[in-house]
Image (cartoon, rainbow, N blue to C red):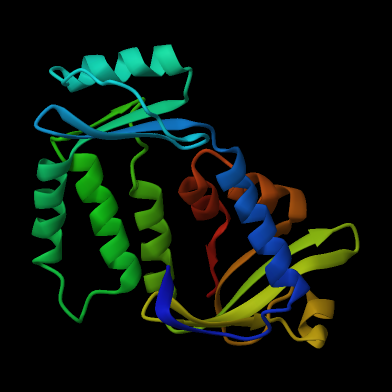
Amino acid sequence: MIAGSVRMGGFDSPSFARLCAIAARRDLNRGRELHVLHDGGRVLSVVDTADGPVRNEWAPIGDAHATAKRLRAEHGVDRVVVADASTLRAAYAAVEATVDPTWSQPGVMLALQQAFRDCPGVVCDPPLGALDAWRAVEQTLIEAGDGGFVIAASDADDWPIALTGRLRGGLIVEVTDLPPDDVRRLPALPAGTVASIVTRLDVLEDALTSADVGAALASLLERVT
């Protein structure tokens, strides 16, 4: 739930680099998918997320559910997504028509993700997970109110990840390193902190690389009262 205008401090921060490296591992290890885009059954493109475009002669798609199941078995991938371009374009347009300047960037992204899942022209085998956990994270940050947040993870007697920043209206608007004096006082939190994730490094790693990152983060995120 990061604002599009977020202010970042310390791009050379070891803490921030460690956090990004952990998150990137999930993208690298999340498995192969086959994405099939068609228009009324006529196949437009097929892409293997590991190997790139698949050059082949593709028969017209009749039953998208049966096609997804068959292609998953034939190609040995973890998921097949079959999407009708025209139907999906209309679903996205319906969401975009409701967006106005009061929407946050994460709000738009969640709405588009939900539209993809709800679109009758999209078939996924197996189905994509629900977005309920991400909405729970969003709601927790809104209810926390405006103030500071802390993300910190310990490893033995050290805190290799120790970041802080500001929340406004449920959005992260500033991120920087936690000052050394505040790091030394962890797990105690600085005054003005309204939300935090303070845990062990291995627990945070498991959360950020899990199959359902939203649910894992929702379980770690705490409001500070």
